[in-house]
Amino acid sequence: MQQVQQEEDFELLARRVDEAAAALASLPDDARAKATELKKAIERFHAHALRKLVRRLRESEAGKALLYEAVDDPAIYALFLMHGIIKQDPATRVSIVLEEVRPYLRSHGGDVELVKVEGEAVYVRLHGACSGCSLSAVTLKNAVEEAIRARVPEITHVLMAKDDVGSGYLPLNVIDERPDLAASGWIEGPGVDELEEGKPMALQHEDTPVLLVRVDGKVMAFRNECPHMGMPLDRGMVEGVEITCPWHGFRYDLSTGECLTAPHVQLEPFPVRVEERRVWIRVG
Image (cartoon, rainbow, N blue to C red; front, side, top):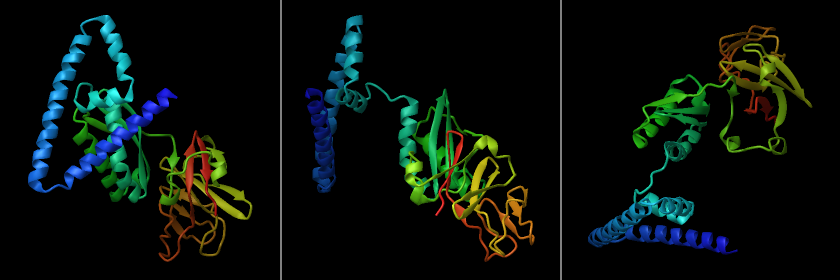
């Protein structure tokens, strides 16, 4: 009970700091400058005293053990972090940067995931619109790289982690959903190892025919009907990112569903996810 009360007190104090900072920003310029200088002077005094305290504790093994134990407290950790006495590890700092750029990526139908940090290199995995090869995808990738390098200067390489297969079409209204996928209306499909690159697979969910295609390391899902005459596409030939209807020769871009033969015709895409090497489709 005491621990819970301490955490609640910490959260309350943190909110009061945020409220005071917001009030400071609303002051007239002259008053804000004086208040800001007072704030900085107090912080410098606190930082000086805290550094002396930390140096004394580090002089003995018992003091070091006490210091490490104290830093586990979130309030003490936040205080030391604010004054630069301890520094966040690169992975934590990169995670913070990614959280800041994530709203921008999601506004363009994409997302980003931190895979690992190794030395001066960061490996990230891009999802949705970010993972394609279009100009917009390149722009989103550049935004991630620039943000990381600007905020975590010791990182010299931002590399894109490559999966065997990833999700294709994933609209914004389902991008935040997480398992339990079945309870969220997702339909379990085949394992990714059952999908051969460039070889369409037909599935049937109740009255809905589904076409799955693995192209360039991504799984795309569409209604298995050519909009031209409603004929199935699963026996169509795939060349690159294009599939040709085996019945009347209409060609479709599998990265977008756009018909290249008749621009007014469009394949109906279904959201698709890949979780633990299993394909999930959202139908209807």
